[in-house]
Length: 402
DNA sequence: CAGGCTACCA
Picture (cartoon, rainbow, N blue to C red):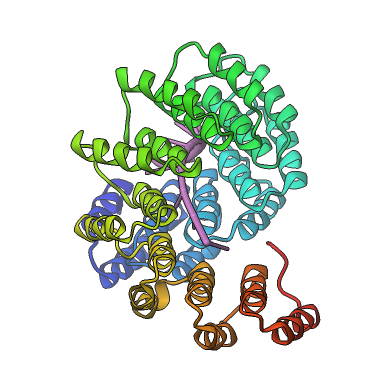
């Protein structure tokens, strides 16, 4: 069996049984000992829904000399597929212990793991490894480093990596800009934006978001109109709609959304959430209902944030039955926010008992759940209940934010 | 053979 035969077989693999046959052929012919062939196999198995993750792991554990590609693949699978960045970093330690040589694809994955864990210490250590192994000139590595530092709130370090880039590309610029946007640093963000060799949609969208968060609606709109002349995308529209909504300019948000639809841009769940929120603010259940219908038409009804926005909308408009229907039909799609929204909704409508029932049957509560219930009691002049619950909260406690 | 940046909610 040759590697190209293996590749062809994998391309045609459609069933778990096929995969097991291919695997046994690879082992029987001894091809599995070829690191390149093994890497093809692992790459396929981690990406394919046909192969359970633990099965891929078992294959990996039996390989004698996996190459960097294979290690990268299995580390990335832990992060992206298993949502376990910690395990990816643990594997990296094993990787080094086996004296395997990392390549230029190794660090982007690992730095993303550190960013996901907001683990500044580990990331700085990786940065040192990047330099030691000579990958600090790689623009992908640099860009993930910039992003990592930005996520950890270390903009000076992010800036330094950026400044020291021999050849920053458009993603480098966008990443450092996004860092300042996330930090809410208007001055530096504007400086970076102005200093860019050329404007691009992603950078402009970031600026719209930043100005929206800072209440500079006119500035946001100016950027939006600039982008409009070049190339705008769904994100530009969503960012501008959200900017209006956040700054309580709900009419403008709705008008822009209508314009967006008319322009033929696809409507997705994210912009719909902003529009539903705008309807909540102005207590316009009828408009919200239309948007709800549109969401169903474009097939984004199951999106949990949309359900939450709709629960909020209907319960704010006194249409508690509609809110309740969304909650009751939500099933496993619901999250903590859904529960909190439904409890607040009941309380707004004066259904203290329904709120209580839900509160006590919650799978888990956070600080919002407790304070919603406590202030709900207080607003309905159930002062002794409010006080009792407050004391219970202090005894019980709640999990701290992440 | 694969990797980096932008939009939403209580």
